Length: 213
Image 1 (cartoon, helix red, strand yellow):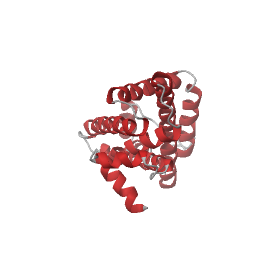
Image 2 (image 1 turned 60 degrees about the vertical axis):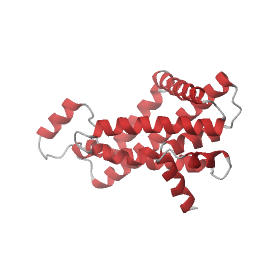
Image 3 (image 1 turned 120 degrees about the vertical axis):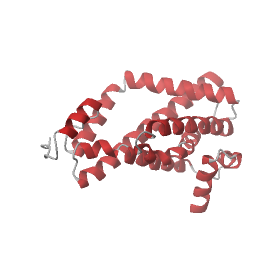
Image 4 (image 1 turned 90 degrees about the vertical axis):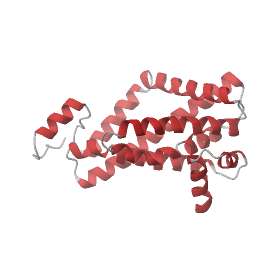
């Protein structure tokens, strides 16, 4: 099983058709997609660890915060998968199961396993942009395979699902986003500072201990 899992990730990173053909043959369970998305979220969390370091989070809370942030990112991933499934069903009449879209999007997140390199100075932002484009292309190819869509239809479903997810976040998702931020702050033990100017001020304040929340 591990060999097949790593083989699937390797094929996806190379955008090799053989890896995507595995998705439609029933040989790959849907939870593999969630697993890849979770590992990718942990990698993104490591890339964002500088924020936790600057906020002087204790080692235990640091580790817990990475896990909480990863879980929150996976929740967002599931929203994107379900909104893409909805768009594909309504716009193109695709009768594929939601779990197939979850698998396709999860596997497409394989490039995000390298997101921890986003912490590199100067190269971080371009690298993360490249990974986002890499993931989008992989998702289009995966949708073509699992949903039987054409390339442009798959791209339209991806874009439509992303826009629906953003709309939900700005409307009904606001309370959930506030809850997620509150949970992350509570796990870290401080009100996390993300703003660049506030981060600079915090760095300039020296190694003094921040009072817990």
